[in-house]
Image 1 (cartoon, rainbow, N blue to C red):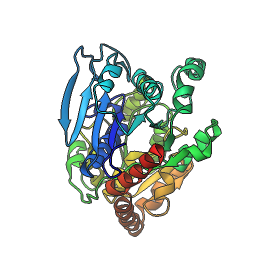
Image 2: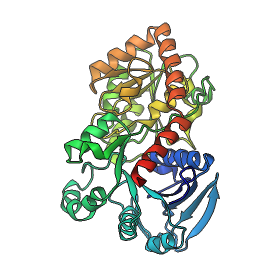
Image 3: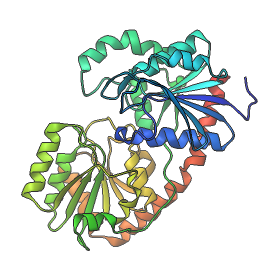
Image 4: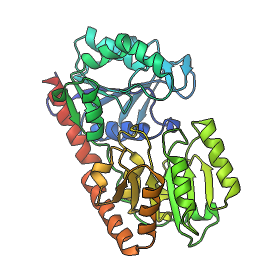
Length: 379
């Protein structure tokens, strides 16, 4: 094993920077990998070329991290087949620990198989995928005992990003002593209104509620539209890639019928400069699929109060300090928004609390916790 203060870490991610179409996990894996490198660890990222298919492997230095974009000749949605994974791993200096993000993707299955053959400990971070949900649930349940169960069973430890995800893992049969809770890092505080979003929407001082994230089922977006339209004069901006055609069509219809609803599509890069233009950010998740909820962390770092569904894992970090936590239903969301929009002092209090939480749960603190998990897995 390497010197205790200088680990060799391999990070396995089904997609990596700059694959921003895949949302929050890309920012998290990038932040943690760079944070580890900054602290003196040797970090190699094994990933695919998604969202593109490529027949050649390339290696790049990305902010102190060596990233191996493996040849990915075949893809399906976020699943990419990278047949050279074992050969590339074998060509690296033996890692002390491997960190695997995600579940059910061919790359993760290949890398964890290599780890078992070579007796290299690995940490598994399911990023909310452990329970079979959403698409092709029957197929997932059929193949999980063969493909997924060994990946989880042989992991040295599993990382949950919240107590909610930890409870879900336990309910699915993972022993509590094998789980460690490590939140995702909040961005560095960046308060202030830039005006960029209001100019884009053609708004001035009108009350503005903001949602950032995928346009998908289970996100509570139609609940949010109903809640906002019940508040006279309040505008709603929905920013994010379209991941569900029917939901997107219904939101487009709502925007066509009511000028206070704005569906903008995805924002270029990380949307840190848009949060400050909102009066309130909302994460209205209906289903327990938000194992964390990175957009609330981004809003907190911008000093903007949030209304957060109790189904989101991040709720435990921000409740009462940076956000109001409510059930995912129209009336509670509407009432929480009405309360905040009518009370500037309360918005200011929660905004200050968000900055405090973002400082406490910043990258350095989270990377230090991740280091301790690695050392435990190695031991």
